[in-house]
Amino acid sequence: MGKIKKPNGLSGALELFLDVDDFNPYLNLDYVFAERHHQMVPLFFSQPIQVAGNKLLARFKEINHIDQASEWAGAELYLPLGFLPELESNQQYYFHELPGFTACTPEGNALGTIKSILEHGPLQWLVVHRNDQEALLPLNDELFGHIDRETNRFFISLPPGMEELYPFLFEE
Image (cartoon, rainbow, N blue to C red; front, side):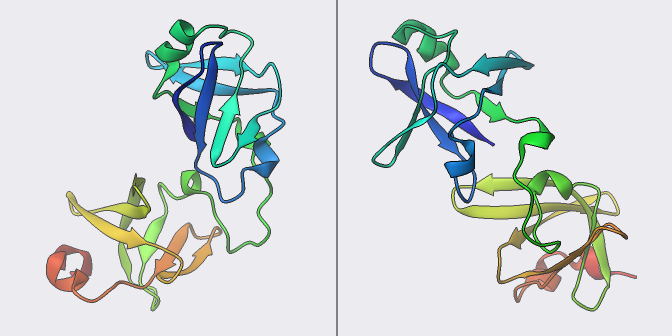
């Protein structure tokens, strides 16, 4: 869902980054899970998330001082799947759905199995495995074709040069 960026002020407020298209549905959550020392820890909001210019500020019941807040900087934030907003169309998807799907060309040729999604700044990449090799395929709205949840296939167009860069994806 996002991460805790850094403390804000002395009273334990934290600046959040939410990796979502629209943060408004998330402003009134009761709690989130934060990953700390490889464990999921529930953090309960003491008030709704505040929007301050381009910042999202959160106050948690358990965190009341900048020293406590500093310990949480960089922690990844998660929600139970049932809290995610319902998708408006069956051709929308959440990144967590894609691992295990088969990446396919628009013609239906299997490229390999999607293992994960990498996000680097504004870029997203499908990590696709085939024949014990790995390829990074760009993921954006222009390249996305469609998703078939019944057959676990994810159809994408590939930009020029991918066949030369990753010939193993196109071997029979």
